[in-house]
Amino acid sequence: MTRTLTRFVLAALLLGALCAPSAAAPGLLYEPTFRAGSPGDVLVPGKPALTRGHLDAFVDLFESAFDLALPLAAEQDLRDRIEVDFEKADNEQRAAWIGLVKDLPAMRVAAKAGRTGEVRAGLRSFRLALDKRMVAAPRHPVHMLLTLQLERRYIPLWPGNPPVAAGPAQAYLEAVEFVVGLGRGEAVPVSVTQRRMLEERLRRGLFTQPQAVREELAAFHRLWLAAKAAWDRGDDSARFRARWSAVLLMSRLLPEAERVEIEPGPTLKAYAAAATKVREAQSGYDAIATAARNPATVLVVLKTGLSLDVKPDAPTFLFR
Image (cartoon, rainbow, N blue to C red; front, side, top):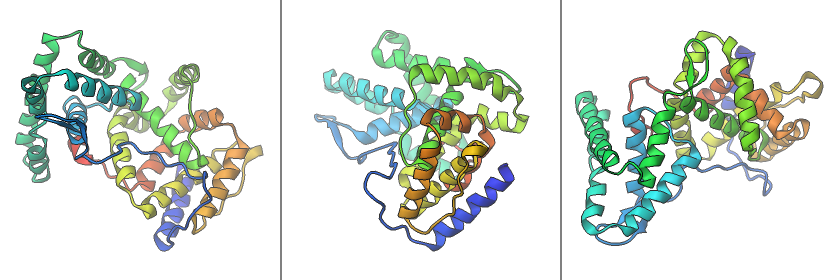
């Protein structure tokens, strides 16, 4: 299945490289945005002010320093809580918080130049400074959310060799929803009950996956951070290729009796028509559950469709 899918994906990528996407009918494009706005946007005025770039830097440093990916809802919650806290803070407290993220530009330069010692020192300094703040005020709303995310790094969710912790598992399920959304041309929300049911089904089903696939799942948070960044910065042609790779996956994962033939086309109208076929053949939750049980194919779509090449030792703040 994976080898065949890869051939289909490569065909779609070649088609996307040769053809410029044209407009699709309104309402038929799933267009997620993982990081909106400009870094220069002022969120809380004053001296100093809080900009969107400060929040971006905090998220990037936190995820890099602790080797995790914040779930989408948790990241938005964190941003909201920091913004509220900053608005109430005095100038000295504001300056101290901004001091947490001021070194990220220099760390990016050092990372790109291969000065790994400087990067490690910078991340360690961030961890120590943040830890000091969290120890001093453990019940602070921001610190409580951060503590919860740190704990999720070690909570085993799916057993096996190696086990998959709750953090990477959450990243994988978010990536599945993203891929399925692209394949169907619509967002596919999953309820809390459905997510818990799916997690349990995967706990049993993913146990039998090859070790190489499980190793990728155990570190999936890194791939998901790279995928979100690649999608946000991708141009129309890059997104067009990703859409086709996803719709081809979803068509091939349909039950045999419901399977539809999909031929990659050169326009967004052709993509929308293909996505509609896939959407009409299967319910949203069934599509999510089917894709989630096939991690090797999801990995192919993300890596090939978004042209990802994630180095195992690269700090994740470089993805942005």
